View 1 (spheres, helix red, strand yellow):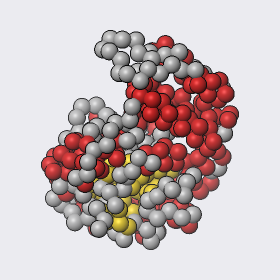
View 2 (view 1 turned 120 degrees about the vertical axis):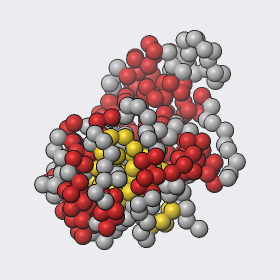
View 3 (view 1 turned 45 degrees about the horizontal axis):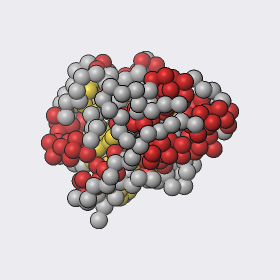
View 4 (view 1 turned 90 degrees about the vertical axis):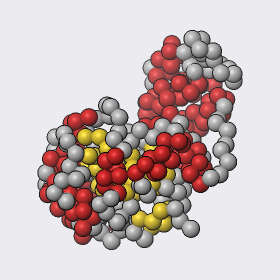
Length: 337
């Protein structure tokens, strides 16, 4: 029996990998999926004009999807004047089986064009945008929102019921305002506020850093599922652990330092294979701080790895790292070259 159903798509887990620009490419999505427990993953944000009229390696990388990377929802964003409906059709023609409209990104370069959380300044335009995308495609269309621009609008002017009436198949709520960014704490009461207003599934988001957090969010809000985002960058196995706790399955051991070291190398080689030798090391450098913390690398070693620009050089550096299996003592320098 499925854990969650979004329109006609059945999901085997209520735990989802959140969309994160610059991080959740198909390589990382498949890495997280390899541990198990992922009900649904989301693409990086797709720029509608880039999808329709652009090209090049960056667009191709965002739109790429390995066969095992399913089920997957493609996240699109844009303001009222942008060709979101056309981009949605373009994605569906190329195999997309679910779409998500981003109305939650707080970054200035996105909100400045009335996209992402910027559209929440004008709730009427947000509803019309959902309507236009839903009318343009036959696949489920979900919406990811924040609680508002400055203050919550989730209980104002029937905004949430209107999103449901516009045809949204599910709503994801990140309960911070756009102005908050990622500061402060996510107010999970805002998720329950949405749950109480609609019949479609509500997906929670924000501040889930442990399996216990996921269980608590579902119990406190009544949400049908939830996304894990930034915490998964540091702990790719977190979705597995959270799913198993919810499902009442025995917990599995946390990967050891040597296992995490091997995982890092697998992630690196997959990145190189996907993006090519020229860009492999450059694109993988952003992952080094996450692995460095788990591997307890000293700061000097971490900085040195980040500054390595050639793929062969970084591969050589990894092969010569000294990794101590035992946990470093508090205050110790940790692992290094």
